[in-house]
Length: 425
Image (tube, rainbow, N blue to C red; front, side, top):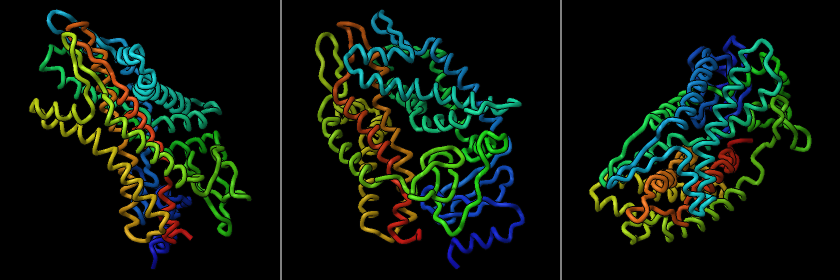
């Protein structure tokens, strides 16, 4: 008996009602029953999580989201971090690094840091608070589902945890050169990181959309005709019949429906090639220049790692090397491998290739450590002739590589690997 038949047989014996769900990573359809509290449904073919149900997930996520908003306000108004050297004191806040990059002429880098560290986290927390708080009202507003879709899109771009690691790297770089004073604002950022992680792990998207259905904010899913092709909505995860002509709108959330992401392989190839081209100047040009007593030498990504090794900071050197060099290279190599194997219709190692895609999608954002570290150093080390750190054009190219590879991973549709191998008739 095939995996699909075996799973359908198990579901057929269950007395509870079930709903058709499609795996977003391999395309296998499952009949998933109503889950008991604290359990999850996983794909029997590739292991991806289809749905995780917790009866109190909405309440817990709302509490963590409200806590995150309070911590975000605290982080922006309390003293963040200060540097004292030879009697001079320089203080930085969350926004100081953004303004410093802008005044240095690198507005592109300032925009990236502002988006990933301030705008995306603030908008995600704010929209989630409105959605989850609105669901607690007797008559929730009709616009909550559309707002939740925007909050879901902002998730990958809120990088508070990566920023905290960048703060740690900057602290280790400065602690031997000057007196670094950590303010309560930094502890607030740490609490914000934990609140965002807790809210994300508490919340299950399917649970939210089913609550929208229960409150009458979106229509109930229409019955599925087994004789007609079905597709998975990328906005809300609903499986429905594909409209005539192959295009239409999701009956639950209104998002555009496609059986697979349009032009997935071509778009991913274009983004991968772009990232490879951008990675060359990112390694050749300096990411920053440290000027001390009127003289200084520019630092590239690799020279910064070598400097940490020479200073005996092996763990930190390995961390920066892994995040700034190993992760981008392996991510590009992984995407190229997935693209070539899909175009060739390879039938082996499908589950392993799906795991590779899962890793590629998850680790790419951690390469932003160098960019966040640079924003902190540029904000703190502005002591005139005594010591100054200036950002370099290589940092702009490197940030572009990180963003391009993240979009490439989002554009690639892993279900195409299983389609090409003939696993999805």
